[in-house]
Length: 353
Image (cartoon, rainbow, N blue to C red; front, side, top):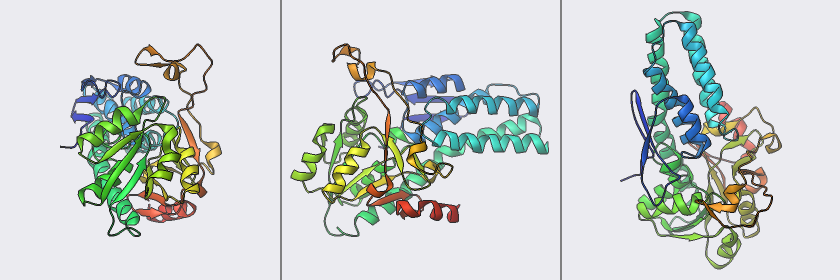
């Protein structure tokens, strides 16, 4: 059974507290957009698709439990809450993209005045609710396209892959982006072994990805971040598959800190490097990765683990993400529409959309 990080029915939202994994499986309730913002900021929920889904559903719950008397009030509330939700984790673009679509809808409803306030509110709620089912469909398409592309060169040989951070059910509505590709390979008996990094300093790999791989009964090994080069040298690695929090016009991608160095090592070892992400992660407003705002995380994430001190009192530099240049994404960018070269991602997606 696939892990479920988000439980929702109208007026009620519960999310799996990922800070407690793998020791404790605990769901807690989100009552409004401010609580959604806090859960995202604290990284109780993380992963670019899941951030957008939880953010919007937290507002859907608040709307369901709030009486709306005028279209102007609906517009003001939705715009204010969506703008605030975007600030929780600014590097990932998915929340900003969902906010833009939500604001466009509510502005159109307020402008046309074709619906009563409560009817318009329900339309906004349904827009946000549709994100759950759509995300799973998108991820399944990515999994299929990505697996097919990788197997072009290894059609008869189950593959070994390396992944970084967490990109599975816990980071999405329930299937996964990069891990969704591995899931498709596994379902078709074409996945031999997954090597997942611990992903310091927040350990999303060791706490979350390892948890998912065990749950899905995939053959897998956990490695330290510093072991990637040795793993590529000693093991037969067929591909690196990671996710992304933002892809810009020239194909540069922002992802969890440590991704860039894996791409450098993969290039040296001639291992195809893939980025798997939905088209909502594409941000054509930015020309290159230099424009991406990189979130700076608290020092204590590096110096302590679950409240236990592991380092001396020292200043820390703790960026949450890094940018992988397009030329290092040698396998391609996997989307729900196909696998594209970084240099063609803008043109391809603009034609499709």
